[in-house]
View 1 (cartoon, one colour):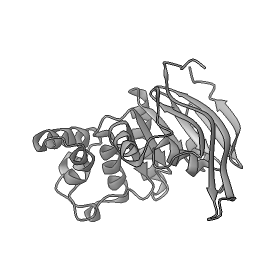
View 2 (view 1 turned 180 degrees about the vertical axis):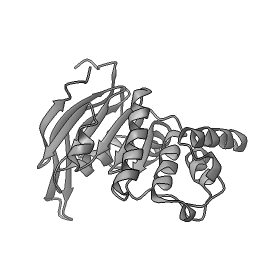
View 3 (view 1 turned 60 degrees about the horizontal axis):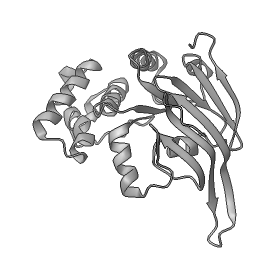
Length: 237
């Protein structure tokens, strides 16, 4: 099958099974998923608990590998790479935004943002410059010496978004990004994601919230490890 050169994600017949020690299948989390995501899209992945959405997100984020099937990220088949190679892919091509922020409490805001660049071997002065640039982007340049515990939940999530952006990733993965925030603060974070999408970022967001899904261009619903529906928004072009 020819590759779609405008696609950032292409998965074909993707399966993920969790097995017992004797090799028998305990859970079939994904049971043959096909999905293509074009560059610059804003996609929402939805489904009930146990539908397979977290498993799919982990595979798309190169945190897990499929049992069988193909996953191409920017045209490269990453479905059979080893852990070291997957780690390199995560560091350079994927930015993660988590519900629980996942900031390191002992580090300052600036240091938290620099962590992905440190593991990539980026020189210190360049790390500082790039971290300051993304802090300006999320309007937190006056908090660079603070630690996470000194910030509000919304500020911590903006730091997490800045950390996701600092490596200029091809793909942003957001897992319930407003789940720990009040309504007003969550709306601010969603507004920032809207802006990033308008700038051309490719964003995949996992959520159970229909109101959040309405902001996306496309909604993919999973059920029992299969795609139940894949709907393009009326205003998506």
